[in-house]
Image (cartoon, rainbow, N blue to C red):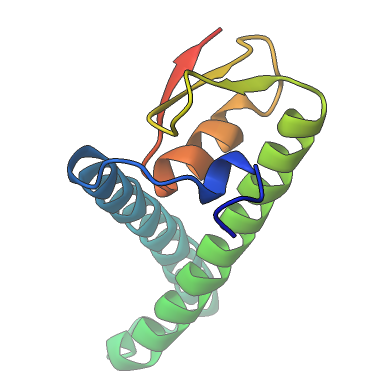
Length: 125
């Protein structure tokens, strides 16, 4: 797909893009796990299932965190494609080193997340 012309198929530098993608994935995993833990432990407290139930709650936290990650990634991908179609995001230069996002775009944070998960720096337009 080298000649397809789509900006996400062009080669880019690996050093900064890899570290940025790893950082974004770690942040997404951490936030999803924290949200899942709060939800599961709150429900466990409400139902009175906290006495020795740690081993039963851990799989629930992992499953819920995985679902949250999938949902956020999906929402970010859709926001990016919507921003791309409405020209709310532009790539700087010929490569994929940096993208500019329109500041007043409602889902700009999702677009930024989508790009950073792929190792692309983002700035406001």
